[in-house]
Length: 351
Image (tube, rainbow, N blue to C red; front, side, top):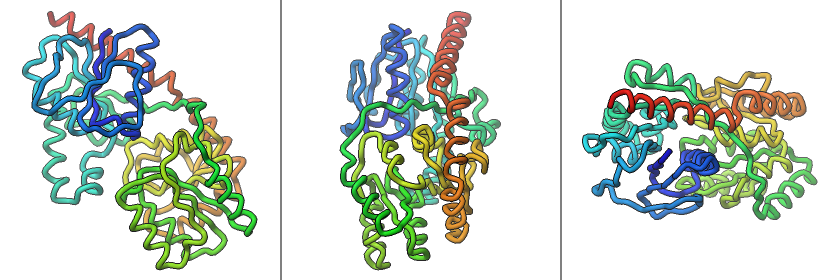
C-alpha cells in the first residue's frame, strides 16, 4: 500500500503520536508511507519522507492508495481538494467531541460555527474513524461512514532525564505527603486547576505537573497566591513521562473534555493508580479500574484520591489488565489495516 498521513504539525500530541505508530507499523510491513504537515512544530520523528505543505497547494493525492488525515486543518485540506481525488481512498480519525473541544479551546462562538464546518468537511471522506463508543453514538446520524477503532498503546522503552521529578517526589514523601501527578498539555480543557484547589483544601498532598501550554503561567500564579507552591513541582514536557508514575502515588487526569485518553493508557500500562473525571471518554473504564470524581466537585475529587491511595494495588492491577485485553496497539494496527484494505477493495469494485 501507499499511504499518506496529513497532520497539523509534528508536535508531540496524541493524534500525531497515533499517526506515528501507524506509520511505523505499515513501514515495518513494507508499505510506502509519507507524512505531510502544515506547521513547523517538531517533537515526533517519522521513519519516512516528511513534507511541509500549504493549505492552498494540493499534493498528488492519487499517487497514494490511502489518504489519512488527523484533526481539523488536515480534514479541511483533504475535503477542499476532494473533487480532485479520483482513485485514492480518504480516511479521517476523529480524535475528539468536536463541538466540546473547540468550545474549550476557542470559546462557544467559534465552536458553534466551526463545529458545523468541520462536520461538513468530514462528510466528504470515504471513512471516518471514531475512537470511543460515545463518539460513535454522537456522530451516528451525522457521519454515515463511521468505524469504531479504539486507540491502542505500547510504551516506548526510551526514557528521559526525570532526575528533578524523582528528587521532588522523594522530598515530598519525606515530608509525609502523598504525591499526585499529571502529564498533558497545560490548557483549560485538561482541568488541572482542580488539582490546585484540592491542594488548597488538603495539606497532606503534593502535586507534580508535567507539561507545557497556554495555562501554565496562570497555574503557577494561582499556586503562589494560594500559598501552595511549596507542594508543587511544575516540570517541562518530558519524553515518555509515564515512567514517572513509578515514583508517585496517583495519576490524575481531571479533563473537562477528551477524545480517548492515551495518557491514561500509558500510565496504566506502567502500573499507575488513576483518578479521572466522570466524562464520557472514561466510560470504558469501570470503578474497579479507576477512581472517578464529579467535575468541579473538589470534595468528590478528594474522595477519589483517597480511594486510589487506599486501593492502589487492586486498582492498578485491574487497569493494567483492562488495557492489555482491550486497548493493545496490535489490535489497533489490525483494525486500521483491515479498514484500509476494505476501502481499497471498494475502489477496485467501483472501477
